[in-house]
Structures are given as structure tokens and as C-alpha cells.
Length: 77
Image (cartoon, rainbow, N blue to C red; front, side):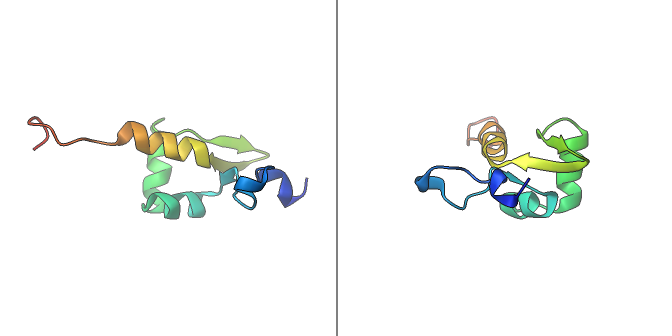
């Protein structure tokens, strides 16, 4: 399988990968690789295991952030 298989096909997303390896995913989230690994092992962040490689779908990372987003309320102030 060539590397193009992991990229979206339409022109709007040309060149944007569908999935990232741990280093890229951690950088995209602004966290360390060890924190990403801990979140994965705790079942808090989804991943794909493909032929031994652990990949993180970009869409799943975005969804993870949306679900983890906290809003300022009297309880969190």
C-alpha cells in the first residue's frame, strides 16, 4: 500500500492525512507522546492498529478534543 492511501481523496482535503502516528498525533494535540500513550491505554482516545502500527485518525482526535472541551461554569470556575 502506498502512502497516498492514507490521505483524503477530494481536492478540499488534498494532502491532509486521514491518520497520524503517535509523534504526529501528540504534536497535533499539543501533548507528549507519553501522555498520548497513557490516554490510549486508558481507553480515552481511539486508535487503529494496522499491521502492528498504531494510528490515530485525525477525525477521532478532533472529536476527542470536542468531547474533552470544558466550558467555564460556576462549578469549574
